[in-house]
Image (cartoon, rainbow, N blue to C red; front, side, top):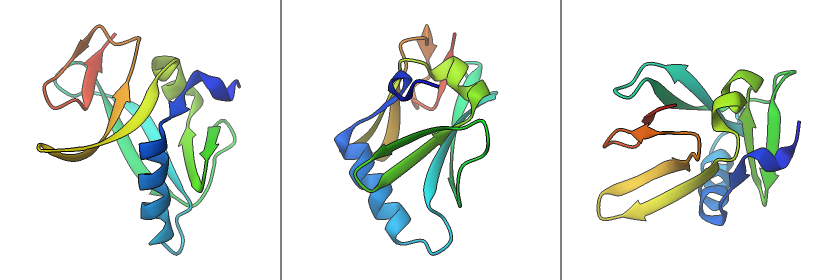
Length: 110
């Protein structure tokens, strides 16, 4: 798979590296797409030990992100970012395939 299909911002890479540094048996952040959420699909974030066979592996600085091949279909062309503002801190996915997003930013429709 082409590792350029999903990108990782510098802010997201720094935050993921910080989170992983505090874990002893988790070495990557898995981002997946699941059915559900107020707009049809939702993003799920999990800390995991390592990649599965069909994962896209994105590495930047000391951060590793894993995306399974089924989720990649919905996330192609996306950027994973980390925002820290008055509303709080969260990972945000800028997905060009999404035609609608919910207010909370964690679910989308295609």
